[in-house]
Each structure stands twice: as C-alpha cells, then as structure tokens.
Image 1 (cartoon, one colour):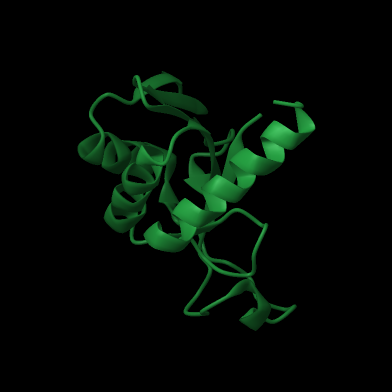
Image 2: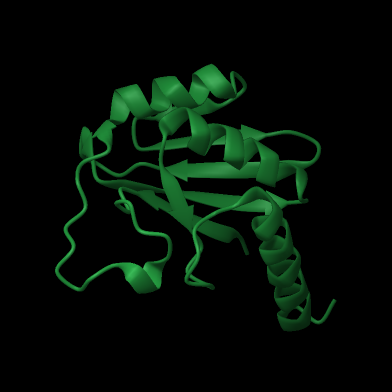
Length: 131
C-alpha cells in the first residue's frame, strides 16, 4: 500500500473545499520538463520510461506516475516508508511551484501537516494489515 499524492494546478485556492465545481486546471508543463525539475531536486530519481519513475533509498520510496501525454495536467506520487519522504516531497513541489493533495483532507500538502497525515495513513494501513 502507498500514500498517494496528486499533483496538478489547484489554482490560488487554499483548500479543496474552496474550488468551484466549474474550475478547470491548467496544464502544468511538458512531462520532460517536469521530470527534469524533479531530477534537479532529487538526482537519484530513475526514470524507467517517460511515464514512470522511482526514487528509492533506505528511508522511503516514491513512484512517479506521469501518464502517456507529453503535456501534463497532473501526475501522482506513490509514497512508501517514513516521514523523511515528506521533506523530499516538499522540495519537489517547491521546485515545481505546484500543490498536491492526498484526498484524505481538504487541505493541500504542507510539510508539518503532511507528517501528521502520513502518520495517520500508517496507522490506518497497519490496522488494515493487522500489524
């Protein structure tokens, strides 16, 4: 199981609850440019093919799902491991100047809040897996 974050243009809204039903996100850039910026921040990211990449270390892993199109409107990060991933995600989002959400709260990714969110997700996962 992974903690999944969804990255896209969320406009200037402060939470998902503020986004009107008729909001249409803008393209976030070319897939190759997004990948290049991610690698600039985290040089150990391995791009398996243009649609998929991974970042793995002893503390956490992140899978990047970019999709088939060169013009991106969104992508996903599938996170496994500990809270050290949160700072890494924060660095990536800062470089991209984008926001992310995990869908479990109406709020966007924030380093301190997301540490709590990841801890809650770990608790939920452990409960489901009977750990």
